[in-house]
Structures are given as structure tokens and as C-alpha cells.
Length: 66
Image 1 (cartoon, helix red, strand yellow):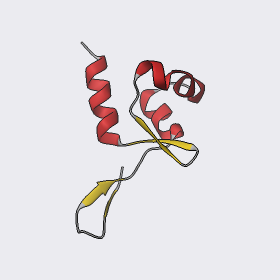
Image 2 (cartoon, one colour; image 1 turned 180 degrees about the vertical axis):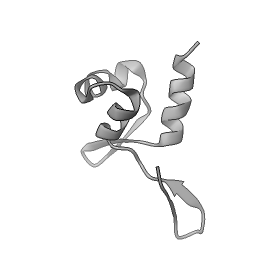
Image 3 (cartoon, helix red, strand yellow; image 1 turned 120 degrees about the vertical axis):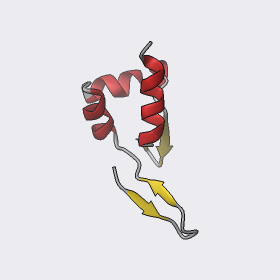
Image 4 (tube, one colour; image 1 turned 90 degrees about the horizontal axis):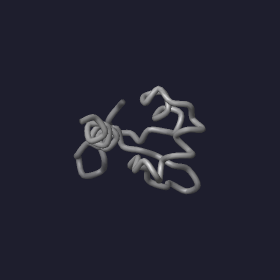
């Protein structure tokens, strides 16, 4: 993942696409689309696309592992 500086000088992480999230989770893209709400994957709607912050995905994944 890359970071970019915003106009205030702080950095922000790039948002991950569905394809990137599926690859990261080692799940099919269809599983991610079908389960993001029920599994609580932390997506944000950007226009008509779902995007996810890498740090939020890491936090979510940590909560899934007992």
C-alpha cells in the first residue's frame, strides 16, 4: 500500500479495491461482494464502488482471529 500527502501535509493511505481486498484475504471476489455486510468488512462506498482502508482491514482481520 502506498501513502500520499494531502494538502494539509498529513499522509493518508490509498484505498484498496475489491480486487485487492480479495487477494489480501485469499478469497474470491464474489465472496467479498457477497459477504462484506454480513462479515463486517470495513468498506466505504466511493461513488458506486466499495473501497477499504488497509489499516481498517488489518484491524478487522485481527478481530476475526481469536
